[in-house]
Length: 614
Image (cartoon, rainbow, N blue to C red; front, side, top):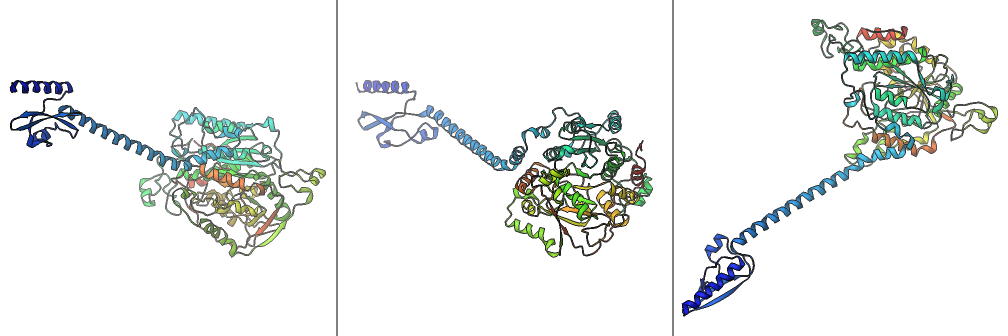
């Protein structure tokens, strides 16, 4: 009977365990009550869940059968594994989300540096001028890094040469019907263009906002035929526009002089090696023993060619008597630059007859403004102020104040005075580089410089300081042209250093009444203390840096001009005569211009306007 009872109890327990999906639990003696057997633990069949006990009578004591209320044995193994998997998945997802949030945080931290200048640019540019900043959708020529064009096929080169000959022969003036004939004394603005399209866009935007630009002639002088650049320039509709093309460029002569001839001597080959190689220019290294590099010599050739072209060969400027202003593609102009140019021209006539060059821009030494984004500077403004004022504090100045005649005065907004309107006079109110560290603008200090908004300095022309935004008239050009031999033979591939050499060795000292520097010079410049032309290019022929983005510096220039707006359009100038200790000594050139072929080409540009090279 007892055996039968135990059998039924055993079946009942097996039945209940079967329902729960748990195999039969081993029976234990009363001495094992509350303990887990080693075999169960080793097999992973036991989990720390609550249990209840079913006891059976036995003569020697009790036997407890464990009844699991949740989890258990084999099923518990799967449950444990799934728990581990779920835990690992959760840890992975949490780590992934944390990394994503961290990356977004880092990106967001840098985004003001990258996007803010662009947003600022467009916010400071009128909506109608945004079209000059947008890229053309279908580019016709491949453009490589830094704005250089890729290699061209021979047929492409021939086609480009034909286009250049046609355009130069036509001398077409765009928008001539809208603005009428050019006045003889109206400003002519000549822009030397290579291939830096981004900079050129911003220069055009600044020109479009200049007061009086509708009375000017804007001449773009190119040494690269680029359909995208041509399209941009031909879309200019705010003044008269003309394009001229330097016909002896590297683009049209990639494998022959003035480009790189395969038989040219390598730059760093010494003369003995060059003679042994029998290369073309072995007999003509420069002052420092180096041979020519076409990419550097082209800039000087182009500058001299465009000056000859504008003054002596264009029909539209044949009777021009006004100022010709020379700019480059990486310049940026202030809204009142034409007003100031006219005011300086009038000041020369009445108070500085010796001044034969006007300079609207200047270079200021400063730290790289990109450093603001990479490290902190404390007290930098005080340091920069000392840097800028150090030279001025050491010099004695005598001042000559020029007050315009009453009938020629302009008010602060550039409008004629009542006396001007009565007398009917019509003042104009509506109307590449040396080897040196790349100059940058002290953008943080420029607003304070505009406290000198009425001041201009009279000083002998210095190439490294006064070559930006320089202007002169036909009288000065005729004197320079007579010194073509010295300009073309001076062993320096920089046009500005060559001009300084001409001023020191060929031009007679500039004479005339009024203010004059204490040292005689063939070129005397009147330079605005507060510049109206800015240099925005960080990369070019001479300078290759890691920061070639133009947006940040342009935004800073625009903000500077916005801050100084109340001081623009002055009605008079105060001339400051700089004290120069002694005459600048003659110096050796920078080299790069020893090849006699460059001398001959430069000279032929002067005397043979229709020169054609093979």
